[in-house]
Length: 178
Image (cartoon, rainbow, N blue to C red; front, side):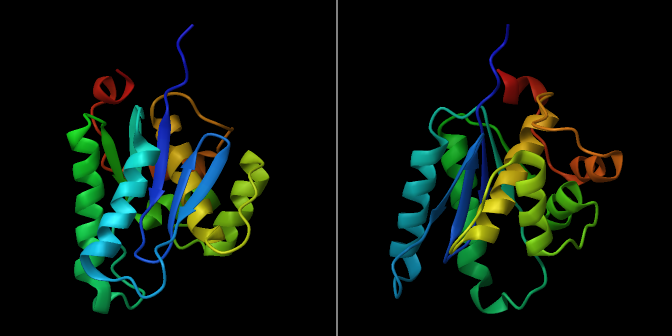
């Protein structure tokens, strides 16, 4: 019998990155006041610790709203650095637009952060509490989407929600499951 692939979900952020694997969540939080290259290096080093041995990493893509223009360059750089960390380790990665993550979790592409967190608790039995709770929940949905894409869904997902898988940039299935 084949083993369940090891998939890691990443909700990348400059202040609180959410990380998830099957049955667990974590956050990566740089110290207050750390900026620029030291902050990026800290986050990427912790991300690298989490993705070791993964069969697939699912990364949330950019959001083009929400007033992030002032930090766009560092956040875009972080996403590129995380993808590069996967590439250097021959780990396939997928990029999931935030609207697809919300659709998969809640059935609405504009699903609120609280609704995503509630869906993670209800559907997967995973509690995401405290600072970073929404980042953890987002990362868990990304993980669930990756496993579903590979043919290992964590739970039954309604067809309306499953449509969220369609708008993502998935690697070739053979590469991700190898």
